[in-house]
Amino acid sequence: MLRRSVMTGVLMIIVMIWVVPFAGLLLTSLRSTKHANETGFWRAIVSNEIGYSFKTKGGAEAVQLGDQWVITGNVFEERNAFDAGLAAKNGEPAIMPIRGKILRFGSGAAKPDAVAAGDTVEIRGGAFSLAQNGDYTWAFDQEYKKGGKTIGAKVLHPPTFGWRNYVRAFQDNRIPNALINSFIVTIPATVIPLMIAAFAAYAFSWLTFPGRDILLAGVIALLVVPLQLAFIPVLSMYAGIASWASELQAWLGWCSGTDCEVPAKTFSGLWLAHTAFGLPLAIYLLRNYIAGLPRELLESARLDGANHLQIFARLVLPLSMPALASYGIFQFLWVWNDLLVALILGPTSDLVLPIEIQKQIGTYKSELERLNASAFISMIVPLIVFLSMQRYFVRGLLAGSVKGG
Image 1 (cartoon, rainbow, N blue to C red):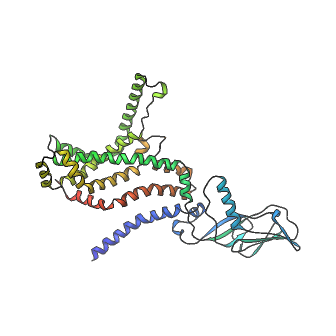
Image 2: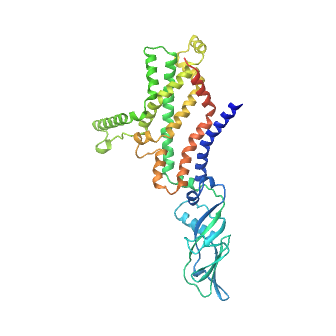
Image 3: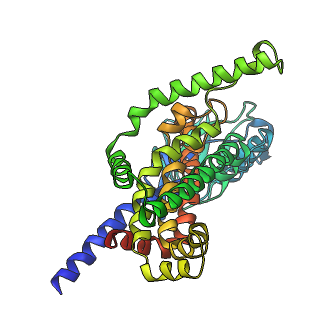
């Protein structure tokens, strides 16, 4: 009983370590810039005291009431209308409105705590009063002809969420283009090593050929080789191939001058790199699983006249679906979230999502909520893949770890 409680506690801690940052990323991506910068994500679901500056109306809107000239309005309505107009002018989605209750205010943006809501302060010779609902009254004993005045106020703002940051992310073509580029890189870089590894795992498990055990040992040994060691040789090889291809096109007369230049960094280069880096683990996992399949089943197929290709396609692949899905999830997550390989070997113009987000850190470093929206977009795709294939995940890993041949 104690052991079970300890295991449950450990699992809960692991879940919280993952869920808390995930929740923080999601909540921040749904908030406004001011809220995200001034309060932590754990305050997103409660009301917060936020400082704002508001611009009042000027003398042109003053109305004479008896012996006084009075300017009236509502700071929330006027500020929200101004923000909406500015967003529309810039072609951006509507800004999340300011609402809540005025707690304190002052005669300038730097004095938001001067008096409590409902009290009166003197501004430019007039008596200014601001109510909790945002209504203000500015009364003068003689005609006032100047413009409005910026005041500061502390507002108890209720929780406010919206999709503005996601709309802005998709309005900027860089995120959609990077999302498409990530799919272009990730899908082939997952399928290609998966198919090659499946064939290799079958060969290592059920075929007899000279040097099989030595080759398998070499594949397993590659698991401990850091991929960083291969960057310079691979990049040099790509540059050599690109130079050779350029010269060949020029020699054949297909192009001339700079038109013959073939880029060294391409999507196909990324496919090959990810395939090479992922194959050792893929072959190791799939070989352990396929080697544990019932020998009698495969021998019966051989007696019925099936060749190796038919056995592989009709028996081994369907029976190995848990292991294939398990590795497919791993490879998809690695490639989708990869920054280093894509940065060194990938195209310099067609950027994948991790590189685009990394570049946006410098562009939108003061807009945390916008960065979080882009980051959440990059997370949601592998999350969907994992949740849709999770039933195979544990089955494939456990089967590959306990069976051997």
